[in-house]
Image (cartoon, rainbow, N blue to C red; front, top):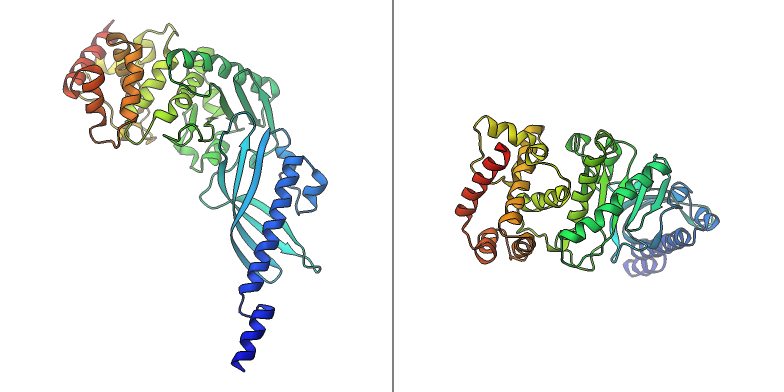
Length: 386
């Protein structure tokens, strides 16, 4: 009897193995057909794989690749939940695919054919822009702007800002980079937070952020500049340009930014590039720190990483950015812009955080951290007292 049961299990899957394997193969084939339909812009073929939800949202996105890799399948009768990694590349920008986890609900009809009922971000994964509505695309000379719920005129304005930012960054950052930027413009702050998989309170008052893997090298997918339309809309023309140039600087420097790079350097450098050539005085670009210095409160030390947290202390966060900008401005003025870039790359090339700044300051700038801090405090006091 035991032998018969084992035989039956092998033939009909009463032990679960062959039947599950067959279902996995069928679902992977379904996802392959669905991905092919996305790339072919074939609405009829897409509909044959299940729900059409999301197809129209993707029409305007220039895709070079789109594929699913099934990672898990939880099946109960004619229903199943699939976990899959979605990999895609935006044409002209992504050298390697962006990979994001998805959860798909599936059903099987009486003929044994599986179909997709829903496709959504996996738990703890951020949304993609097209999860929020129909995406629109505007190409600039150096940029691709993707938006949801925005007018074409608005997206063209973002493209113009990005197109000015790219050459400005290239003029400051002399190392090789792709010289292009992808900007995502969701409809609201809440939608921005959805793209980042974080609560909206984390980004209230933040005009834009840049996402991407630090130290990713030349094969990393392109970074995304994600705009908070609520905060961005409150800025004037010059402020918007500074923000887009700052974020584009993060894109350019990403391959040379690592765990060894302190935030005062990465954020200060991006601000230095953003304000470079803007004509703003130190007091205009660093108002919170200027007020503190006016009260006799010159910071004792360079900002720490924790000072850049979105904790609700807006003045403290502003002072951290402003002090970091002045540190990079001091290097550019006293050692030269080339040395500033060399210092940035030297810090990022260090194996770890410990000793990274100290070693780079000694080799590139010829000072100790203690000497640098004293010079920086004097520079802050002098620049903001003008």
